[in-house]
Length: 160
Ligand code: ZN
Image (cartoon, rainbow, N blue to C red; front, top):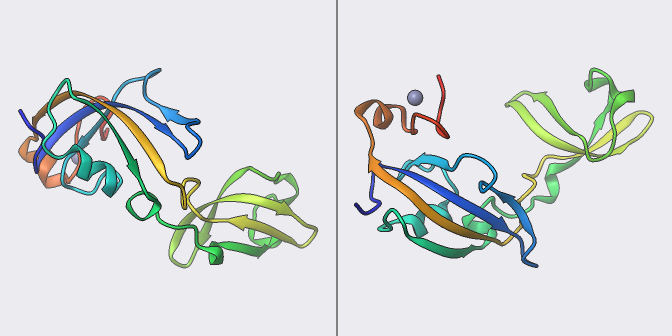
């Protein structure tokens, strides 16, 4: 059965960066599960999945525009320390969540100053060209409930 709109796909992947370094992999854990055609995985990978079947293995290299988007310099920001609950405890490299007018925002701490904290709110993989080595484990039709929710249910999918 080939992957098409509203297939639920189970797959393993290893994600590598520009130098071939491994960034993440499902090989040590459960494979990932997603509803095809609902924009639940990055566009470049979803496009490459189209028409594949269980047992297929392939490799696809995806530019930033088809992955997590370009790095936006404006997302590197200086924020007053008073906006953080415990600014003295922050360390560079730490991930934090900020509550903004447009909702919660994930960011990485770059620099901790006395009055200000420099943060980077870009996705950690923004601006990166990514290579996915994929193995399709299973393909099935989505249930009516999954189509209504626009995501897959079960191990590796949404839990609720
Ligand atoms: Zn659901």
